[in-house]
Length: 214
Image (cartoon, rainbow, N blue to C red; front, side, top):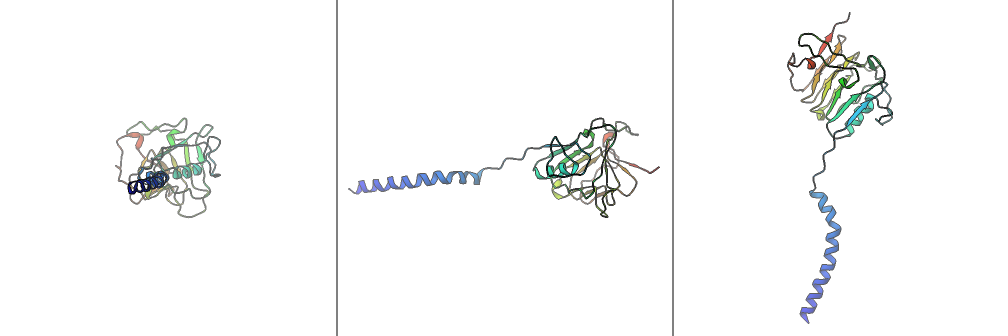
């Protein structure tokens, strides 16, 4: 009789514990699973205006929208350019651009018709994307600002000028600046904690050039 009672108790406990374990299993698995890394994405700037409706897609994407989209995606993203039309495309933000808070490569050479420098002692680069800050009323605001979490980022092949503050402000480590042109009008590169780079890069395409006003 006692064996029958003990068997019944075991059976009842089993009926209670198995469903409870089944319900708790997904939560337990979530506690030990390693979250998947966000996939890197490429955002293409296809407009030179400064509008922002919160969406960067094939229909419309400004530089402001692309920076916001890259910040929102936790991965090593790329911002490319494909602005329609010939010649230099000027992007004139009317307010300070969002600070860059995640790893991203902003590649001005991706604009069709652009090409990096190939000469060691001269320059034959073709740069077709200009970032001009003359329309921003605020004093002392930078053109592009790389904050702490943007380590590993890069800027390539842009003309940056007209900003009342620095053209590029870096407060993160390991940010690469290559093929950058500026007009001598106060739009400088300001570095807080970036990895030091050689004064004259060995690769011609990585050289940064300052143009004196004529």
